[in-house]
Amino acid sequence: MSIFDSMNIASSGMSAQRLRINIISANIANADSVKTPEGGPYKRRDVIFEAVGYGKFSNILKEVRVADVVRDDTPPKLVYDPNNPLADKNGYVAYPNINPVVEMTNLIDAMRTYQANASVVDAAKQTIQAALGVLKA
Image (cartoon, rainbow, N blue to C red; front, side, top):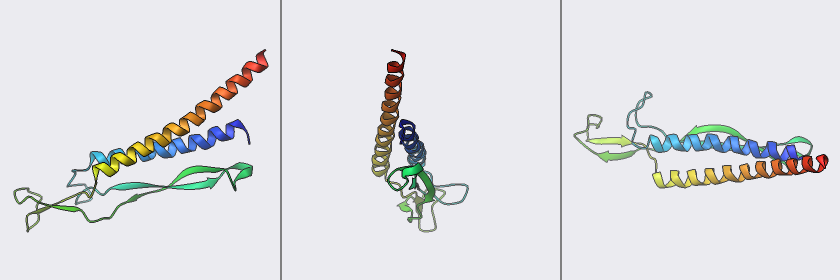
């Protein structure tokens, strides 16, 4: 295994987490979106990751890939608001079933995982620079 393999594996994790951060941000931004082009409230989305074998040591080294972005079909929250033009015949408006606290927790987790992978890339880069420094001497 080379130092470049560790950089490739860590950068795959960074790419996956970047997409996860974007999806979580969209969930937070649409927490109050009661009307979408598809009809009804916004549906929360989540990212599914998969570990894929990497290189000669694929049994122990795993690259992270996004397997899918799935829609959460949990029923919406119904809020009584009979004056809202989007209310049903009983006066309820369907809101996305998004918990901002859960989304913020997921966002912090994704950001920290991204930072951990960035630290691996940075450490590998420093190792390469140190090796080049030895060769110059």
